[in-house]
Image (cartoon, rainbow, N blue to C red; front, side):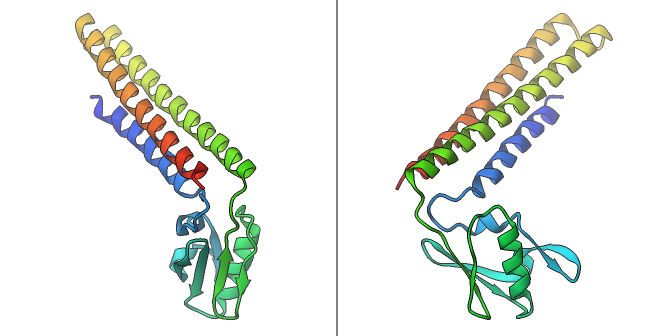
Length: 181
């Protein structure tokens, strides 16, 4: 009965970790390109399906499109994204050079990380509320006893605590990664 709520909490955590993967931490990480879509024959297509993406150096990403005609489209998609990086192209490949993060920018990123983490905790607590509402309804409908209610409430709280702690760990890990020069 509680597995559906645990699955929702796990999805919330997975979503948060996916968002954290797209935040760059001084090093070039190809995952920051995951959300960028490129116009390909009128269809917004994920960049990974149109090019080979490599990290030749710590702060450089190289994008090698499979079709030469895609260079301009990929360049345009990067410029229109919220990456804040100007792509360089040599006619065949696109190169993204990531500047060293300033202390101020690192602190802004950590604030953003904490804000996203708080959002995930709120989502987990909302799942807890939904689960508690559901079992109270079952008690009212006579499907479970008072003892079952208390038992389920305890299990739901344990699940909530577990996932809130996992979110806290994810926040801490990503914050440390960002602040490490």
